[in-house]
Each structure stands twice: as structure tokens, then as C-alpha cells.
Length: 215
Image (cartoon, rainbow, N blue to C red; front, top):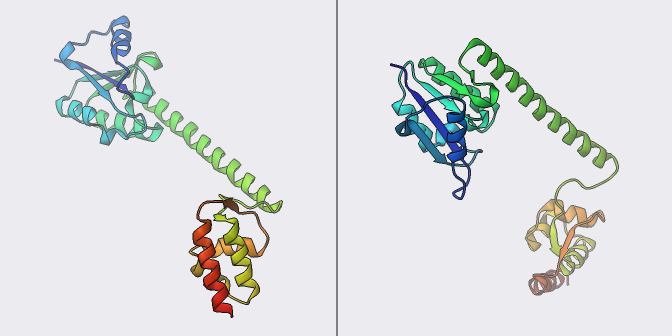
């Protein structure tokens, strides 16, 4: 005999799954209390890493049905949802989603919906990447330094300039001050770097050491 399970998830301990249980009951779906699986786990956690869902899978048999109120209960993203649904479909387990009109996601229409959702998700990812790359290209063309500026003290900057003026290489200067070669190159080229007051004492010692080595 087919059994019906409810998988309810919330992302924080101070939230409860009662409203999800009530939504399923209001839809006329009867789920026995011992077949309600509630879990507190972040929505960004893949289904394969959710202990509550793993226990539910161990209980499921061919012909059973799993009900969720929303699609995001079944995975961290469209790909994870599709993988989860296909895995259960392969075991003969139906998956119903109330937010999609109580659609059976393992049916032909449900699987088609999964494909559309995947296409939309991929389109959104590609669009974000395209916009990000375009913004970086515009910034570089305008001579704007891309990325987080290195953070050094004002005294570090002065000492690094002194070291470079004395003929020291970028690599040796970077090693002496414990910074990256990119940071030294930025300072040499007059590009903006983050300046902090912390560590001025240590910078002074390094500056003195470098000055002594130039004598």
C-alpha cells in the first residue's frame, strides 16, 4: 500500500515546520504523524548532506510519495533539486510539490518543469558572469585597479619607495616587507593601496633594516 511522507525543512532553530504541516493538511493530503520528517538545516546544504532527509530515504519504498510545500525544500539549487527528484523517481517514489499546483515532479510534466528550471537557473548564472566580466573590463579600461587593494601602513609605503629608489628589485623588496610583489608594484606605479595605522612600529624597524642595508 502506498504511503505518504512529508519532508519539512526550516533553516533556523527558532523557526518551526508547523506551517508546512498545516499547508499539506489544508490541501487535503493525509500524512500520518510518524511519517512527517522535519529538519533544521540551511537551504544552501546539498540534499546529500542533510541527515534528516537521508533517514527519510532509508524509510522510503517503491510506490511511496514524498510531499513538500515548496521546491526549495528539495535542494540547494535547481540542479540539486533535479538530481534528488530523478534519484527518487528511479526508485519508484513520487514527489509532489504544493507550490507547483501539487504537481508530481516525477511525471513527464514534472520532469519537463525541472528542465525548464535548470535552463532558467543556468541563464541567470551566465548573465551574472557576463555582467561581472563586462564590469571588470570597463574598470580595467578606465585604469581602475580591480580587486581588493592591498593593506599596508603609511610608513611601509614610504620605506618600500625608498627601497625601490635605492635600486632594490620588486621581488627582494616584497620579501623584505612581507608583502606581495603586486603590492610593491602598485606602490611603485603610484596606484592606490589601502593604508592602515596598525603595525607602524614594525614597519619602522623594517625601514631601518632596509636603510642600513643600503649604506
